Length: 465
Image (cartoon, rainbow, N blue to C red; front, top):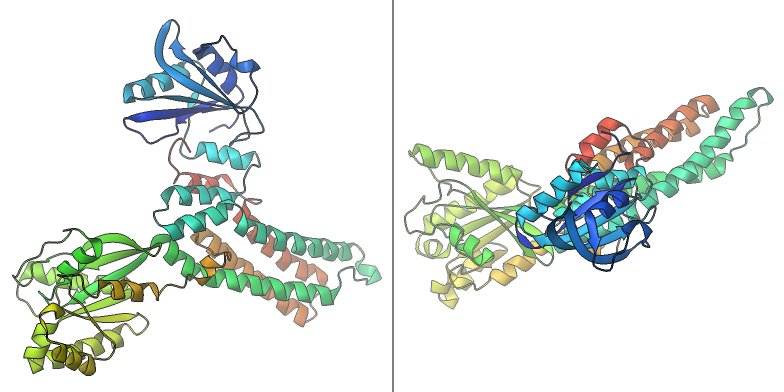
């Protein structure tokens, strides 16, 4: 792939719609577009100012394909930093493909996935972490994931990393300078100031690394496993939370033979609810496989919701005893996972029966999945498991696994630098660890990159972006 030719792609989702946008970018974008565009007022696109929109027809020779709007962006004031033209046409799939094919025949090349954003990075319009945030913004499906992507795209994270890198680079330059005067035994880098910087960098790196747990949850949503015995109302609860008939509801025990997943947004945070097969002893091979998968889903979830049938609890002492055993088993097997114990079908209980249940089982949520009573309290409790304070305070939150890995490696090198300071390590050995830390900082923002890294990142983009 070269980045000096002119590329073209559909910049809006594929399929029919009211309008579509075909984007051209490259050194010949405006000249190619001007050959294919016939302005209603006779304007030549090559002579028009940047950031202007013009009405006309898109033509293949004398054949008119569509009436379009041509928007001109001249370098370096464009998304890619190159000359860019965007044709806004009618959303017919036929028209879209005709315009693209004509552009290809007249000197354009089809853009590869993420190539417009890649050119933006290569031309210094954005750094690598901001480029990755573009993909996150496109894929954001909740308020929290959107806010995280916007923050990163605006450079909040990369700005913090660049500041630390520059300060460390300044000290590294002084230490490198000391090597040129090794025989004179002089120190250009103030060791006290250097110690303060290393301490501050260590603090910032640890804060960013710790933020990844929160960022990953806010970005990808929280998986919540709904577990319990068969026929206690797990599927009904899922339907109540989703406000739709997503799961099959039946009086027959063991109806749910597989896991059912769906997502909802509560308070701007995405939750992925997993309705699992009921846990019980069974000779049914298919149901047994479903129960095995239930434990796998509980293990993979971050929150467990254990559902009980309140009618059975008040009518059968052995059921209440078994509930205590099951609750203890989940707590012992998954001590780090928040557990919500929920008694369903309370719409059929008297007030005294409800009071008895809450006294028997600690922190019990009373709920009627059928009527929706108690659902709001349950969703509010789920939100309490998410630390949104950092998001509300607009703090930098790491969401990208690649960034997380680079931060861990940078911290490891900074710890080596600290050990070197503590043991009065020679400047030449200290410089090696500093250079390595600078390398990992540069990997995050793209100041240090390679074709394989860029290929992996931009392969996940959609074509046209």
